[in-house]
Amino acid sequence: TGSGNLIVPGSDCNTPACTSHRRFNMKASSTARRVNCDGQEVDADLADEITITFGTGQISGICVKDQICVGSACSQGGFISSLDETSQPFAAFTFDGVLGLALPSMAQSSEFSMMSRMQAGSSLRQALFSVFLSDSSEETSEVTFGAVKQEHMASEMFWVDVTGTSGYWEVRISDITIDSKAQLLCEDCRVAVDTGTSQLAGPSALMSSLRSRVDVKPDCSNYHSLPQLGFIIGGRILNLAPADYVDKMGQTCSISMMDLDVPPPAGPLFIFGIPFLQKYYTVYDPIASRVGFAVANHKGRTPEALLTFNPDLASAVAPTKPASFLSTLRANARAPLTAR
Image 1 (tube, rainbow, N blue to C red):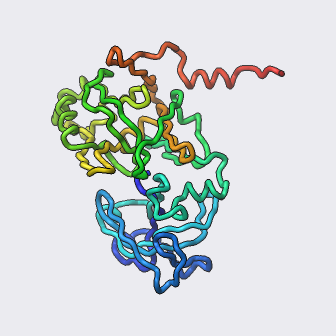
Image 2: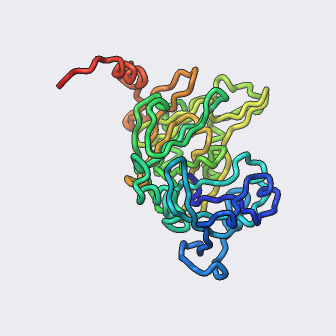
Image 3: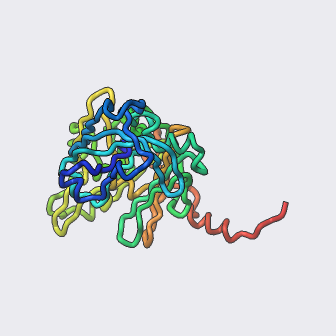
């Protein structure tokens, strides 16, 4: 969700990052043709090339138009066939390419935006997609196009409008909490929800203050007494437990947060990466320009309740209903049908 384009290694790319993966052979497709990287049709000899730089690494390639299918949902669209990929990080990945699902404004054009094409072609039951990230080998991570899966939710879902025009799935943070108490660290901060980032990230000055307050000891001596770290979004506190935000290897602990200073106008910006997305099931609605959040339902785990933030108390208010979201769903499923 931090990239807007589909990028696959091309058969003309001979760097280790490409040759270690499956590559797209344009000559083997009877329908593929070169286009300019703004989507304009041109003679193949005149078509331009593109270089995209990521947080780590970059790719250079040509732009191609062909039939693109996700399952049975197919459409004519543009993508980037790489001619060069840096070894770091692409050679280390098991997957072949990048399926960019950021907002359409981050794509080269609407023809390069997967969701824009699916929406225009009415390919999906609903013009949205949802992400469930596994946190163990007992589950499989999943991207679902066109539906919200209730079985992945352990709470009700709430929606937050996307802010900004950067193309990221960006929402506002009212503040950061420690053990559900507001820290006055963040007034009207912004955060991008990004499935392609491995950690939590944010402005260096703020992250330094946050590390100091959480105070993770390198020898893990305070691991079991570390606080809940939360973010106030849409009037709810989205908490992360120490197991969610600390990398623990034996008796060595480090906080899973990195500095990222995004310059204006796109920044300053927080990034919610994998630790957050394993804890929360997310849904992305490009039509209404909003993101949905719910506590993720993981096997063998007791889910935490979503807490509502009370600004008058500067702390959380526990849910008043004792029944869990899942138990309510199961009760409704067992209830007899009534004719009307």
